[in-house]
Amino acid sequence: MAADARILPLIIATALLMENIDSAVLSTSLPQIARDLGSDPIHLKLVLTTYLLALAIFIPASGWAADRFGARRIFRWAIVVFALGSIACGMSTSLWELVAARALQGIGGSMMTPVGRLIVLRGVPREGLVGALAWLTVPALMGPVIGPLLGGYITTYWDWRWIFWINIPIALLGVGLAGRFVPDLREAAPRQFDARGFLLLGPGLAGFLTGVTLLGLNLASAPMVALLLLGGAGLTFAYIWHALRVASPLVDLRLLALPTFRSTITAGTLFRIGVGASPFLLPLMLQLGFGLTPFQSGGLTFVSGLGAMVMKFLARPLLRRFGFRRVLGVNAAIAAGFVLAPAFFTPFTPWQAMMLVLFVGGLSRSLQFTAINAIAYADVTAERLSSATSFSSVMQQLTGTIGITLAAMMLEATGAWRGVSATDLGNFPAVYAVIATMTLISAVAFWRLSPTAGANMLRKAVD
Image: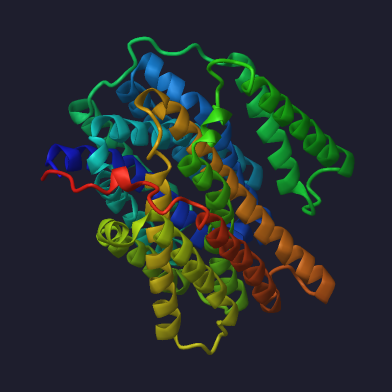
């Protein structure tokens, strides 16, 4: 791969590093934040899901904004908005203040990550795309490695609010590097913005998923939750009807006609729902169930990110050797086993054994995500890349929201059935079994791919 094909994704990854450190730090710190704010730890899922929901709502406009105003300009402003949201998070003194600040962060993240990915997709030759995506995620994967340790240390020995201030120097670096090195990519004739679609899909997703998130939390009345669910579902279905009848919809559902893209949406959704719940569940289990401090918890979970980082150097050779279908099908089943494994952890399990399981699980999940992210664009033409990145990014955030919400609801339901609190240690095995089953089902769906799917992306790039 040419040197500039590595430099560009590494620069874009500065923003991904900031976002991933933030997410990993926050997941580790949730139990302590709940205590300080006087909230139920399960209610703190709103802090995670609100961010993901803001991403899902505004990501569809990211491709159009990059085409219309220039990818570099949108990327830099997105970093600034994310940093302002981080400052607001650090100054929050209540649950709802923190939720609102996370929504602001999400607006920045909704433009930052997909536009950054679009810059790489347009700036790197297709035959070098798998390698470029791997380079793109290497610095970003430092977040899950650094985040749990950093968040655990800050939360245990300092004040959790400081975890948001670490984004500021990274944001300044990202804005500076993007201004100097990122090309000002834009479409000569950008498509017309689908305002009607945005007004249908944004409120539709917001209403429905907010309703789902509030189920069982006693934070809103039953009629209000029902109104959010039904109203959101109605608007979302109205968007589907609209999107199939206009030439340039906000999220182009016609991309599902491409078998490789469709597989990443259907099977990829099942996989991400299962895997996405783990970062929420594991710190709760280790801290509230096992009695570990945030720093001890982070000292165990960081190895999952370390495994993910190691795999980024191995993904390309593995995909060349076995092909996308075999890797995606077999590895999804392997990943399901490692999603289930924490169900068998106890306070007496040797820490070395837990770290080994989490490290290998990180290897498996990283390989799957690299393959999914790459094959999604195997058959997408250049003029549809912005639509495809928006569609794919929306689904990633929605599945993250659903995974966390499903895990929280399962904890509450299992606790109610057993007559104990939602975070009782005995509730976790059943929840891990459910999310592991969803991950396993995705393996069957991936096997429906053609044996030659994505072959055009695995040709050796010229170094």
